[in-house]
Image 1 (cartoon, rainbow, N blue to C red):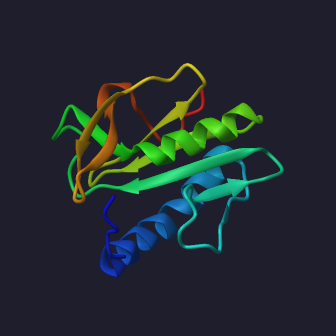
Image 2 (image 1 turned 90 degrees about the vertical axis):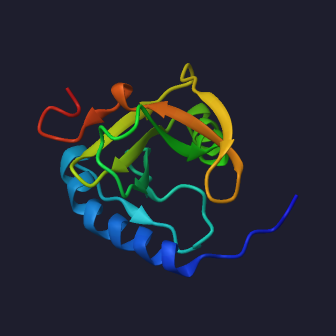
Length: 139
């Protein structure tokens, strides 16, 4: 399997999107999410007291531009391991027009394809299954 170089530019953009989104997540989940200090950690934010995890993915398109959005399989697989030990895990997608999310559960299933910048396995997440992160998000 090839080793892909670390893309610091995309990583920096991702960090900025995460930093901008964190206060919104803390508000809606009434949480105190912490970022892991390891830049290669698989999932972004954890609140250990509430057993909550959020993975944030920035997007450079509007939420209705494509029928699906993608996430690497390793993130969902790691999330499933966390769910198995009692965590709630949310995937947060920050599109250019709105922020949307989905809670992963043990029953969650997505189609898989090889795609993305490095042509690796990704899950295809239907945008219609995402819920806007707004005042009604957790209801």
